[in-house]
Image (cartoon, rainbow, N blue to C red; front, side):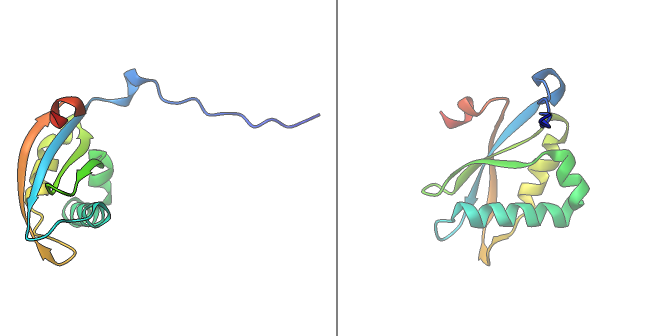
Length: 114
């Protein structure tokens, strides 16, 4: 008799919760790399909100445009204001001083890319 591995079923879309996408820009002297932005984003949010707060926000860097220093983050609908505030509290990325600007907020990535 062969033991079979039981597969976990994914969470259906109706139970996942609503998402919001926030497009932001970092004004800086040089182009920033995606890995640097991702690291600074998560460390800054963890310092500001704690690990539990970041988990509740479901924060995720979806897209980074290095030529414009713009990016799109995904978050939970209920925590949209916290994410916008957290972005505005960021002051540097890997030692490079930045000025964060919130460009737009939308329910879909497609609207923000256009």
